[in-house]
Image 1 (cartoon, rainbow, N blue to C red):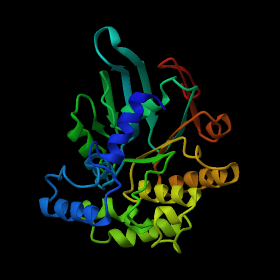
Image 2: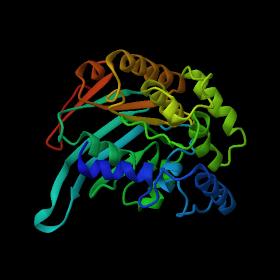
Image 3: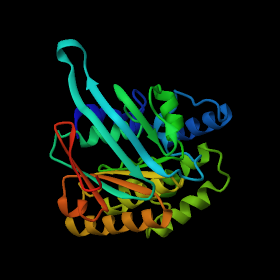
Image 4: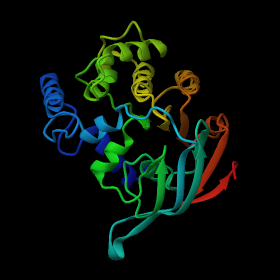
Length: 289
């Protein structure tokens, strides 16, 4: 993963200066504060990342015809002589419900493109429409709101909240969205990924494969139109990884979501309906073109 994309993804999971390693009481206080603040605003002082929580909340009920419409997307990091052009004019249209792989070597721009498409990084220029919402020119807070209910993200390193149980990891964003049945939805999602018997276990008590199952449940619980998976098997052994991939495709199909997988693994890429290969920040080939 490129440095720029790593920073963008960490915004979602650690919320800048506020980390996820605070005691559970701090996280509970953040949830309580957010609920008191209502739907209009989110406290910046809590232990949970505002961008992370917003990006996992519900809001989209009927997905549009296209999950992604990107035109001439460009991303430049740095300024002046130190500026580095990461994405160099990406044109990509993804129909709703399609499974698509972004394939390419390290440094090709895969994770940076995912960061832009998922609203975790703002493009320098170009136009972007995600699940019917125009992401072009939005500031960080507006992007966080736009991601709500539209996008789910599964990351290589799981990024579960260590002080919360499996059920709480899935339910917390739903609770912050005001869903009265958040815990029931979380239990149903965890049962669907084979963890109905592990609801009260903390991440440290779960295997790597189980943690990734929790992450899949968390990503799909808000019923997003679009799910991003960045090297979802990268931290798993081959057998566990294969089971996680099967589960990801199964749950994506059941949810009717679009799935975009970022990977180096050609065998995983070939499980998708479409493969887009990146090289040096550009689309080198597209089986759907």
